[in-house]
Image 1 (cartoon, rainbow, N blue to C red):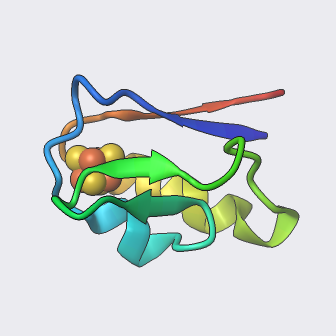
Image 2 (image 1 turned 90 degrees about the horizontal axis):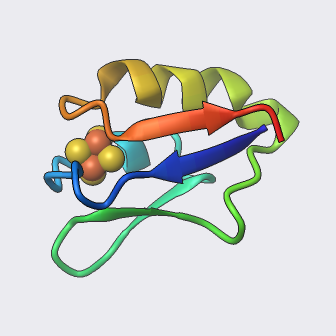
Image 3 (image 1 turned 60 degrees about the vertical axis):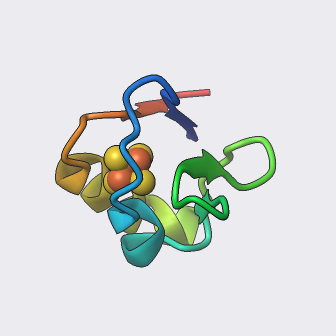
Length: 65
Ligand code: SF4
């Protein structure tokens, strides 16, 4: 599973990085990006799904790859 952040939607709330810090990082302005290539470690799948659900801008997508 991989995570993707749509930078055109992200509004720098930072919630994703709080919920799932092993997958989401924030830049100095608080905008999110994925760590590395976005691969979600097995032990972070649940928190990654929670980050998707809690993103106010619906900017995060999880893909099967
Ligand atoms: S929760 Fe959504 S809007 Fe907030 S930083 Fe993460 S991707 Fe951006």
